[in-house]
Length: 256
Figure 1 (cartoon, rainbow, N blue to C red):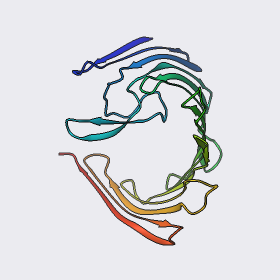
Figure 2: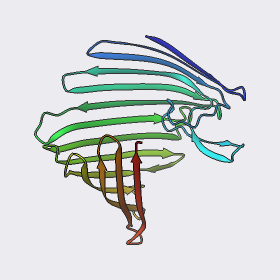
Figure 3: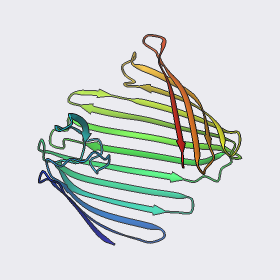
Figure 4: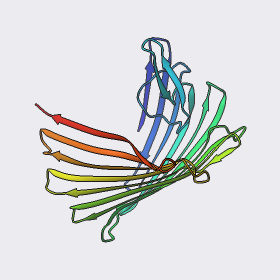
């Protein structure tokens, strides 16, 4: 299928996207051309420029937000293979950032499996590479994430997500690391208890900036007209060896 979309704003900025997709039961491909004006404004997240963000401002309301569409133009190619319980996909994006005259490239490879192994119900591994300044090579990122989901008869669910990356900016290298663990106990069809532990270190080579976030909560969801969720969380900072930033989150949804 061939599709196209254009957006024209009052300030004269425009955005254009042309996409061609085709496939079968076992594979699919897509080719995309995109172009966003240098003064294009869009508060929605998304885009093809990975983490090539700039700060943008809406002067009328004094709002500053993160933008990765304005001034970008390029091409994205994606290929996906579907197997019985597995899926393998890859994406390659090449774009130009006309705001500061940079040439960029990024690629992503993802493997997903719906496991038949007892307890393990999902496995996902993803690798990402990006270079946000091809000419000088001063802004690169390599990232690997692993996500698994374990389930016991649908009552106890355990999910974990691990992410490690190498980030090069100018002449410095950093190795951020994150490990998150989510636990769910489905007491009834409408009631569940949740717990979360999230460890983050901004640089494995530079100790002293790591922290551990804890959260516990309760959720009631009738699936029809009522949902309530409450969560209490805090953070332990290893440099100060103290708990701080206590927070209570409450969410209530009622459909009338």
